[in-house]
Length: 282
Image 1 (cartoon, rainbow, N blue to C red):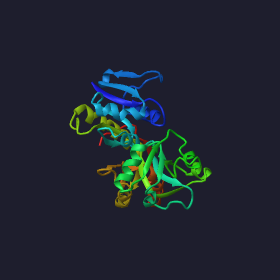
Image 2 (cartoon, rainbow, N blue to C red):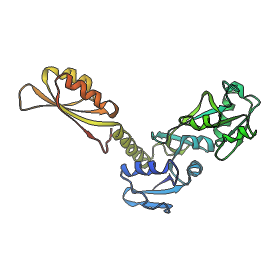
Image 3 (cartoon, helix red, strand yellow):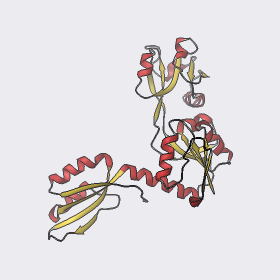
Image 4 (cartoon, rainbow, N blue to C red):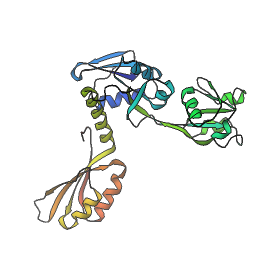
């Protein structure tokens, strides 16, 4: 039975459980449940603190887990990312009082406060910068005001909270994070159960990204239409009862669907429909 770690709370928890449900797996009904067995799919889920998941997976006690890329790197655990999941995205940046730093070279000899000591220390070491890193749990922007550090490193979305604290971001992003599937480094690459699990999640990712588009068009306009809707392999083309007309079915990126529908209508396509894709295998 495949043993999988799932975040039990925070911004990773809800989207992770929703994706697993879409992939056909049972999920817990109450937050107090710590373990759930899905016998039909031969999977056992363990609901753990997101920061602990990489440690459990690296120990080999659990086969794979879902956590954040940031938490994986920060842990220093012997685990690796095998599939990005596209949710819980965040960007890590340095910030300081305006005019006090322009780039990472300005951090030499300074103190950086962060909740992600492992990430920041690795980034500084990789950049050849000798700086001190101190760990704080939350509200790291107050470290500068209180004189504990000259620079902070934190998750930045809009930058509003930093500006309100009289700080500004500088330099290149430290890293971009999102939810990822992880495994112990070098373990189980060809495990059929792991591969099946990954295929299911990949199917959910594709289903969320594409819609199925159907439309009718004149045969003489087919090449133009196919150029607009090439699909993944190629569109399905079927003759209609009315001579000279064909029906076309193709997968189209969701973000482009409205524009493609406009372009198809402009070349004479009609009965243009889109439907959601709930699951797929490529």
